[in-house]
View 1 (cartoon, one colour):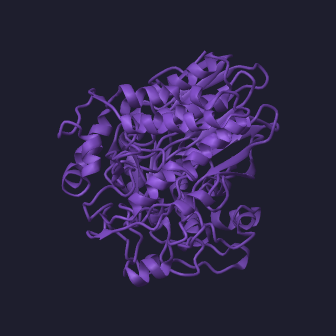
View 2 (cartoon, helix red, strand yellow; view 1 turned 90 degrees about the vertical axis):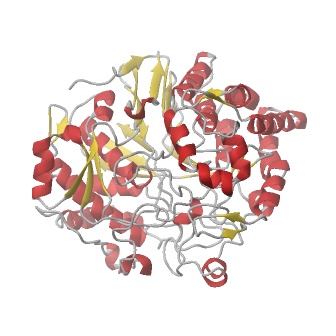
View 3 (cartoon, rainbow, N blue to C red; view 1 turned 120 degrees about the vertical axis):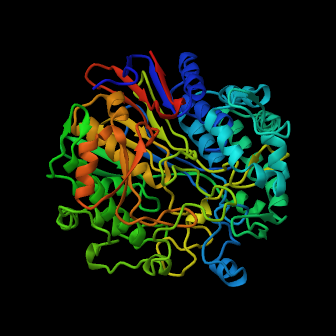
Amino acid sequence: MVTTRPELAGTHGMVASTHWLASSAGMAVLEEGGNAFDAAAAAGFVLQVVEPHLNGPAGELPALFAAAGQRPRALSGQGPAPEGATIERFAGELGLDLVPGTGLLPATVPGAWDGWLLLLRDHGTMELGRVLRFAIGYAADGFPVAERLAGTIATVEELFTTHWPSSARLWMPSGRVPRTGSVLRNPGLARTWQRLVAEGERAGGDREARIDAARRAWSQGFVAEAVDRFARTPVRDSTGGEHAGVLTGEDMARFSAHYEEPVSVELPGGWSLSKFGSWCQGPVLLQQLRMLEGVPVEHREGVAEPDTVHNAVEAAKLAFADREAHYGDSARGGVLPELLSDEYSAARRALIGETASELLRPGRPGGFEPRLPDYVAHGRGAGLSPDPSGVGLGEPTVSRTGESRGDTVHVDVVDRWGNMISATPSGGWLQSCPTIEELGFCLGSRGQMFWLEEGLPNSLAPGKRPRSTLSPSLASRGGEPVLAFGTPGGDQQDQWQLCFWLAHVHGGLDLQAAIDAPAWHTTAFPASFYPRGWQPRRVMAESRLGTERLDELRRRGHEVVDAGEWALGRLSAVARDPETGLLHGAANARGAQGYAVGR
């Protein structure tokens, strides 16, 4: 198979991300003697500047990482619903049936800042100012506008000029949508970061104490105060009306990022794959892989055969149906081991037939009866277009036609000592909430993933995390972490990662070839984002699968939509061979932004 780029190999370090400037900043940190966690933080902050339509400072940070010689751990920088975010408030007082996708109501507590600083404090080696200087430089001095950033701003130009003037002033500084390749600045964000660094340094003490002081300056200081003031003023949102937010400075003061144990499963070939637990969608990748055990997975000349695609699509439908019925921060205790058990996986595997299913079929793990939200059970989202309101982009992800509307960001790093991290920051998108002008960023909208119905695993409740789609991956062999990978893409993340895993682990393709291999996904389950639509039997597929394969999928009953040659996925990956010490890296060429660097 001819690849777009070579798989990189070296011994010093590898950084792969969704933007070349972030990868370069991370590599610069490694060259200066920093470790993988310093480099990931530097890259993550740069991504907040150069891909503001895909992530921001008030977004979220889930990361899986392993310090050299240690087992994988999970860092949750996902903020919960505020104290004022209740079903009674949203459904009762406001009369909503869904949490809006844009505006102030869907804002959860910002988690990315605290998450990156917790990682840097406990596992990094550098001072905060040294790690942040790349991002501050791009915010203050400017960065080149990527095509998809310009396209996103153009999509919401009328919203900005009519309803969100603070956003218009920042993202359309001359009164016009910035041109691709032009220079855009965010001096307000640069000043915010400079003040946070300064307040940390002013506190004195050792490096860890200074980082903690910068964390407090965010959650209990001037940032929280500005957020509290801003959230009190009603703004236009995707309901077509205007609402104030419920997020307060007190909510921010109560939050701190934390570590948790990832869930891991043993897979054929001596592999172990780690993901976040069932408060998010991460385990759906594990469920899909368990269902596909013993099922032939074949690639010919680097392209998946029709049987492989069909079986993967049907496994995805079953896993995501389980996600809808059994995943969430309020999920029943013990449900995840049941979902991943041999017996349950075999029972679900037996449901994969020769033709496409159009049913949403959650299972009964441990004999527990599934319960779907009324909105889903009554079929209200079936066939619904991604955003009929036209008011903002509640989820920046790939549209149903395969045309990208943005998505999220991702970064993977491995260093010469064997430290490894996979992170999928997101949220705080410029198109989902008006800009807080004095801070240079906007709030997130992750709360739209909750259901406004009592008693569900993913019901809206204060202090609970939304069932996020953010899903980094870390794989081990022989007890040693050897592979970090992930992708943006909302509900598609754990489907495109499945394509990558099947191509790399089962198809024998190297990292770059596996990323380049033709991808696919299904939309035959309720979307996680407003307005929660889905299309039974639909499969989005890259045309490079070939006409014969696509026709065979249609013969089996799939509603196949040709997404184009290079349309699906923005994967990146790094790896380490424990025997040779060689490091490897690769990144997605789709969209002409992702790059891996290393030596």
